[in-house]
Length: 181
Image (cartoon, rainbow, N blue to C red; front, side, top):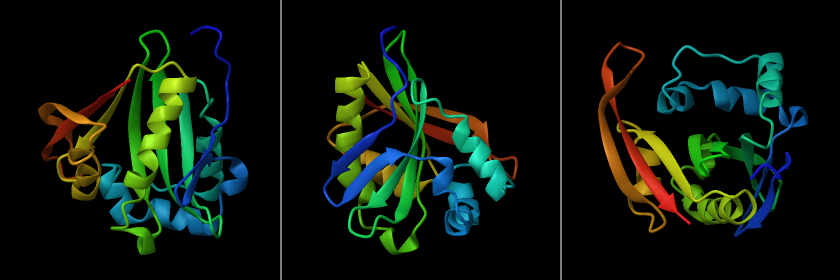
């Protein structure tokens, strides 16, 4: 695994393109949907608000070797509609989908994650040495739960009771789904 070098991602699948986000992708529209309460609530990041500059800086923190910020783009009009963040432990060959979201509300309920997740998994299994990929989902994040519960590439591995704190101080369950090479 030590021979791997940082590598940006570009994957075409179904009607979408998955590619590494760059500072040039940051604009007011992206900022608005990333900062919206619906998105921040699903990610359990209440109160976090990016500015254009802080979002650009945030994107620069992803090194395309051990962590990735991957945009989901509509193949037809090239519009950014969502994202995945992905971390990988190269020594243990375990990847983690640490966050994901669909910001463009016109794509909500259109199974974008279903249409893109296989290609993303295949990429990390084939080209980045992953042998297991996990997703940690808040039990209250129903849209994201749906993306993993009925997906044949993932199985329920664990329910971590009261694993983290919500914005209101309430303890929240985290559900872990796993996929194997």
